[in-house]
Amino acid sequence: MPKPALAPWSGVTDIARAGRLIVVLMLSALGGCASLGNTAMSTKDSEALYAPSQTNLASLSDVVKQHPDDPQAYNMRGSAYGEAGMDEQALADFDKAISLDPNYGQAYANRGLVERRVNKLDAALADYNKALSIDANYAPAYLGRGVVYSQQGRSAPALTDFNKAIALRPDDAEAYYNRGLLYQNERQHQFAVDDFSTAIGLAPQRAEPYVARALSYLALNNNSAAASDLDQAVQNDPGDKKAWASRGLAYERLGQKDKAAGSYAKALNLDEKYAPAVAGFARVGGRVGQAYQTF
Image 1 (cartoon, one colour):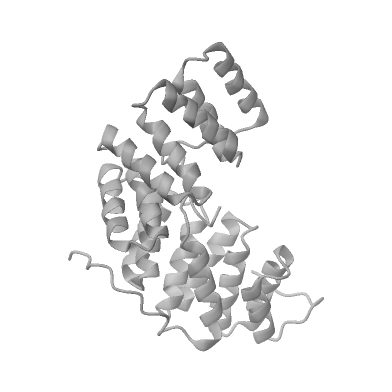
Image 2 (cartoon, rainbow, N blue to C red):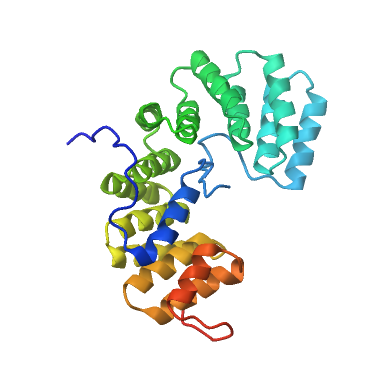
């Protein structure tokens, strides 16, 4: 059965009052960019950004010095700078790569990713469009452009781009994850669950799709499934305060207040001012200094 057109935003109607604040805040946090900060998820091949070390950056800088007219050298170092959060340096390298080769589609897409992250959405959109004008089958550019459309609230073109990215790269977990977020934000939770499940199958080590699927399970009142997903999420990423607070909500709904309090307390240990955890801990009668079960 084909998936329907995205429904307009309808607000939270099927979430219990006690959990509304947490679910809404977390859906908002998850609905940002994918690349996978912002609770976004990044797979190694999706937008060509790699986790660098200082040694790698130094080596890439040596390559640039040895090959100052090689656009690929600048693109590679720019990717490393981007993953390190060194946005200005990344943009400078992508600019240089493009000046050396105006038809370097991957450099446009990589620059678009950094521009998107620093909220230069119009510039990012232009770069993704340019990348696709160079290579109409470049899946990462469809994925990146879809995320920009999502951030702009343009659900229909975002869905089209995510569908295209998936058709071109059916093994890309990030594309399914982002399409799932789009369905989730439109309250089409069963379709969201399906996409998050596929993302989990492709990238089971990541916490983000487990958290996202759990939020849709909570919206569908499948609290036990949500708790199971969040058990896995906090094991995959013990430093994810959203996962711990969501887990608190799931166990709160299941009536396991001690385990809920433990999860909220863990979130508060990570961020003592995190509002969903503060509210949840109070709801279940949590007490500062008391020991609580988490597993």
